[in-house]
Image 1 (cartoon, one colour):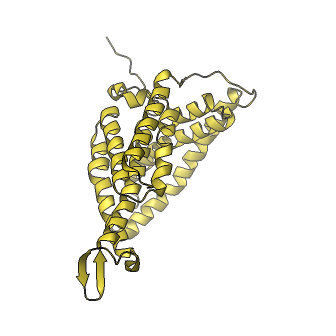
Image 2 (cartoon, helix red, strand yellow):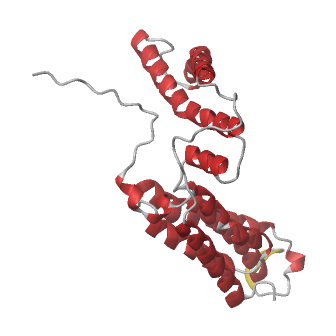
Image 3 (tube, rainbow, N blue to C red):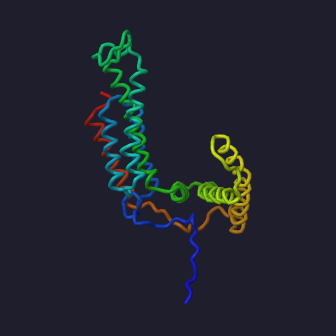
Length: 272
């Protein structure tokens, strides 16, 4: 008995075990809309406590609502803390000492002095940036580009001619990666552009450009023919194959996030 081989589309979206996490089940627009007020407020606050509180909220949502992977752990516990330390230190050193010379002296070398006010200013700025990034990760790590496009078409009434053109563009990214991998393997088999060093690397990359562009043009032609065959743009509306509905839980998530954001602002009073 022979078993027929199954061809799997490498670019098709497949459900995973991680989809049971609640953030994956929310509408992409809800995950974008919920943190918007907090992000706008974080642009103008100057204290340290408010950004730290929003970072804590974002971390809790990501750890509970998104599948915990090495990538997520690296972002939350390595990349962001290192970025905060680097940005905070840089802004502390660049802060005008004349504006904070009334605060305590932390470090002094000759005529140069590092004041506590400069450190507070630098790290409050770094924490604001980290808080904004953390809030954007709520949507960025729990949704896909195609789902976002579908949601904008279905809920925001973006014309499908624009939305599905963007969806086709999203599909080009993994396709280019696959094409580049095939080209690299073909060059290795032929022994093209061998050797080491920066000049060999530059020569290899120049050798990838022409076949990659040719593959991109062929793929674009196939996509255009497929869209024409389906009468893309012939009618004002189209039947949706994949629905991304706005449910009650999306409204609850947005309202709950807004309430939590308001509670943080009331508790810490960053503008008082």
